[in-house]
Image 1 (tube, rainbow over the protein chains, first blue to last red):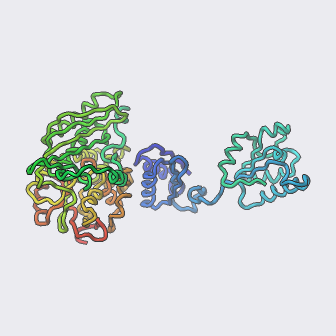
Image 2 (cartoon, each protein chain N blue to C red):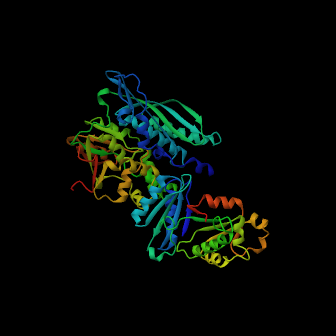
Image 3 (cartoon, rainbow over the protein chains, first blue to last red):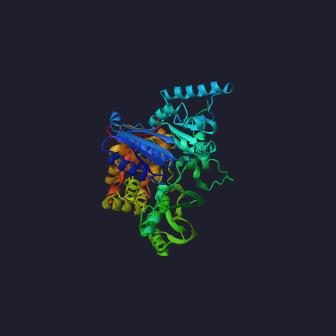
Length: 200
Length: 346
């Protein structure tokens, strides 16, 4: 996939840039181009229509549009662009803020959370991110019964982040077994950009 | 040459506000006291305002200015002036006085401004007028044009919407100058095509208009930023239908190729958005559609004349070296204002 920035470019420059990129594909592939006005989007779509390319566009923030061209045989294309299949994946973020699931008997809570993470790892559609903070930090560190499940999910592309302050507090920094250490800014950003936030 | 890069952004009539936006604003303006001597105001989307002074004399007023569409300031001055002066000719008037309108960055080389104004002044003289003054302001970008005053006999005013069913439509310049300038901005225009576009844009409509004076003219306008179809749409005024012959449209040959390469302006797409509900393209190839929507800077006259006179007028124009063609005819209103067929025979 080729991504081109044509923000600030006046017509016909976005079309010229898109054509150049499409040429470098050599027959099959995807070209994404960012533009900043709807007339440029229309001129790009007009070109795609005449050329027989697949085309779709998404309006992103701040008047920026992403136009996606699908050129050639779809089956020959390995990548699947987000814009062509917009509903393929929601940005789901799971928040684990304790080493137990639910209120009540603490022993039961520990078992439930282990079961939750196991069940999660077997889902067909995995979340994009799992965040661990406060007592949750105990799940990604040595002694956790869920390390294997989390490692499986990480291999499948799930981002796993544990709060650095929390690891410090519980003196677990050196014992992290899965995922990366993160800070409050990233936690907040990930939570606020989620389509779906799950907190067991 | 960084200065010339700044000099030319996206200019000419492509810089016009879209027709949709404009009509919304105009329709909300307060109307002052009515004056019967105002023969043509902005209500009819005409080329210029006409105010009657006495029985035999009316004053024609217009102004036009825009940013550069070519790198050469002297040529830009000529084009901007030819474009502004054209509205007087499109109304059937004679140019009398012109005032310069100048926006120019203080930091830019003043000799550039000198060249622009030299080009403009030459065209005013060629048009038979006098350059009588002007106004300049400092601005981030270059813009130039003229405010022009002319005179016309009140019973020889060519409005743009009084064509009649049966009339023939004659276009006096080739289409495609917008596309050629657009291609030129990305280095894709040939020298030959660019030279032809410049030749066309710097040519005054005076010569075509003077030939009209021997004929019965029902309607006349000049084709500029809204493209051939945009100005034709104003001419039909929702009361008539224009039948356009696709194979009779004069255009710069290379512009067709550049349209095939999608070297198209934003303004052409705005024109398409605004007009497509009025237009029935009957099997018209994409590049020709684009030529018909292409915004023209200093475009030709579009004239409606009775069929009995059309051929003679056309021959006379051709004999004078004007690249005019008979591009269509006016019909009683059908379900669309504009029908474009591939050729006259169909």
